[in-house]
Length: 160
Image 1 (cartoon, rainbow, N blue to C red):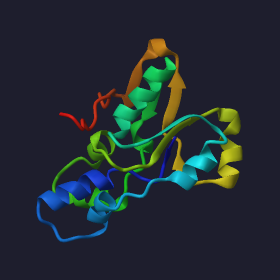
Image 2: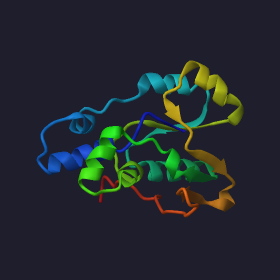
Image 3: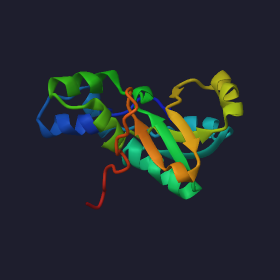
């Protein structure tokens, strides 16, 4: 699962690099909000959790590797910020790529048992279920609406 929506910070950086006037995208990049309150609430139910600073795909890979599991992500379920979609469309970019590979969204990526999902929804509902944990032998898969797998296991590299 992931909280909020994604892609705005990365596209906000792109807007700044292209000298676009300040707006909601640039604000999301320059003034990120750490989801501390949400983390404390979700932490009562989560089996793992981390923030999305290096792109969703790479963060999923980190959780899967650390937990010795696989993951199957449904790309159509990844929540993308509406303003990120609009800006990406103007630049003829893929907003999903910004969400999956871009960094600094600071939303929370977490795993939760199916049996605890409804209980969490009763107290907190600002999250999307984007996939499921699988056996490690299945590896990572990022599936589009037609069932094609995309490699989103690499994201932002702070040292690259």
